[in-house]
Amino acid sequence: MSIKFISATDSCATDEPQVVAQPAYIPTSDFDYQLPPERIAQTPIEPRDHARMMVLHRDTGEIEHRHVYDIADYLQPGDLLVLNDTRVIPARLLGRKETGGRAEVFLLKELEAGRWEALVKGKSLTAGKKVIIASEEGPSVTAVIEEELEGPRRIVRFDRDITHLLDDLGEIPLPPYIHAPLQDPERYQTIYGRREGAVAAPTAGLHFTPDLLMDLRARGVQFAYVTLHVGLGTFQPVKEANALEHKMHSEWMELNSHTARLINDTRLAGGRIVAVGTTSVRVLETAAKIALGLEPSDPAPPNLVCGWKTVAAWTGETDLFIYPGHHFRAVDVMLTNFHLPKSTLLMLVSAFAGRETILRAYEEAIREGYRFFSFGDAMLIL
Image 1 (cartoon, rainbow, N blue to C red):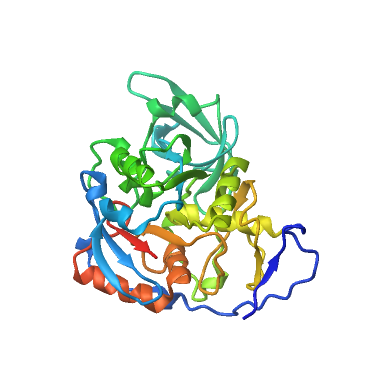
Image 2: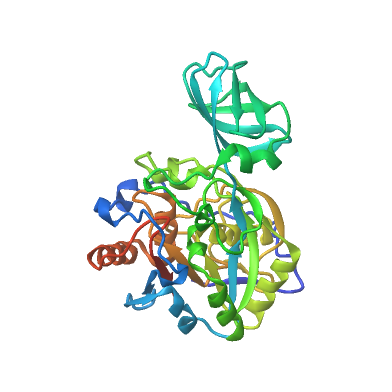
């Protein structure tokens, strides 16, 4: 296949009509596998970087068994490590209805000050109903159901801005497959997270320690930070038989101009872009589409690459769904965890390394006793 590079004298956007062949059907069942329940990690490894790390070589299919603290052996001076700096908010608010019954408001996305999209639990939480949320010794707030959305989703309005009250009122939510209590809530945060807004952690980043980052920097690896506020959709399996019928939930992201320049300069200098986690991958690939003048969900011609501008700075919502057939424009290496069956994340890594290669690697991971999902082990895909 011939590659059309856009030159530095041109804009990366193109006004030429592009016909992009799209698959009509991708069986969701192709991304299923059987995982023994005991392989689901319930608690994190200590220290963080002592988690195991499967190293998968895409070109040969070779697999190595290492630890996260060995990652420097696979990175080179001039590589750029791209990290998602989001932080998980205490999104789970327990309260009571005016009638006294128990209720829960699970924050999903802030729409404006005091107004949120949320999931609710409790009988008859219809428009106009109120939920009173109070801490043991601190503040209390009232949430009014303003609008009913699909299923348990609601638009709720609080009687005041609650962002500065969440530490007193809320709990850090854990994924539904983790049943053991978390002794230290910071263990479900990355050490570099600084921008609050996620309701789930970018879990590949949980493996990094200050010492490991300092070692990578000393070896000439550069760092760049992007933001994607991870939503609950990350845990939802694809229920449609045809994966292409799955509707991705949009998530807020930012890749600023400084980071865009770092990425573009790294590529021009021959360095690799190393994405830490599928969330960083989605940010990078979204920004690569923006560089081509496209929207996140627009189909992109596989033979069109902007040779001088890998990504463009962008802030907004992304609903990019990456599945096999996606042409990666901004990611050369990926560090990720082991993902749920039939999930969009498993489809993403399958797009990067090949479905059969990934499923074969997962089979070996199960045989070798790797720990799966959020608190589990890692996979480095080269």
